[in-house]
Image (cartoon, rainbow, N blue to C red; front, side, top):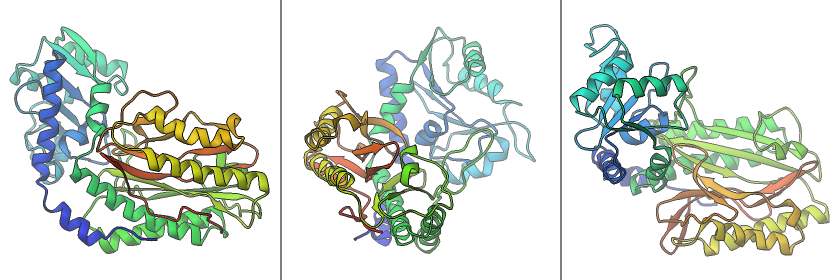
Length: 407
């Protein structure tokens, strides 16, 4: 199968002004803030702070905070330990420091005192304050409410998710680079599928790391960590086989796939924060007639979704396109609640291609397309591709074999 040319993608990426792209994200968010009577938004969630600043410290043992006023310049707040790192890598240049570290000059000893100072400077207290309801602890919520003297605390998780749903062409190039590595990983996994779940997974991860070293060594393959750990390398493969496949995701084991089963490598790759997913159901030898019919229906369902997906189609309509194939083939009882999910700064984000969803797909949305059937005591059949919604169709980023894959 074909794959992306990393040299061409890197040349395309060099044409973009990274700082301007991230500034435009802040500007767009500020417009939405004014429409929703928000005086300031305070972000702690790693995916959100990265989306607005372009900075990922990998380890978030000290908070990384982005403060966005409805008017004026946004601020990136980091611990003094991150001063040089953020200066070198962030696209947002208004950086403030907290906490003592070497010769740095912080504005406060802790993040919350620093936030209070910044809010005063921005004249952003005593108004409506946006917070991340899907991320903040109760303790953090109460601290923000107190130091901001908020007139009202407003959950802006949906506003932030919506701001991340439509990718810029710059972000899509990064997604293509992630897909380039995922495609290489999938090829290696399939070539080693009969050895064991572990061997297939190791082969995929090794192949992706070699590609990273050879072609993309100046890009980060880090994912987003938390207060107790970081993800320095986000080039992963989880391979399962037989009745372990319906687990969805689990650590691979030394199990060797058996004749008449399926094995499913799930390959994830990331490039400068942007993730791609590639999954392929591999037939071990030959399937019985019933499960072969399910495999055939899965492939046909994918084709039908690929043919109809474009800007203006609803997520529910995409779901129904594959569901109609599965029902016609006699698998109504095995339908899943969704056939895909958003990809970007998270491996699973909005939008969701869910049953009965009225969400209208727009150009620049990036989703997986993975209609499948799950048989809990046997296995499941599912290929997953990462695709970009375009005006008149889709652009497929993951380019692995999608016909009958026999290991």
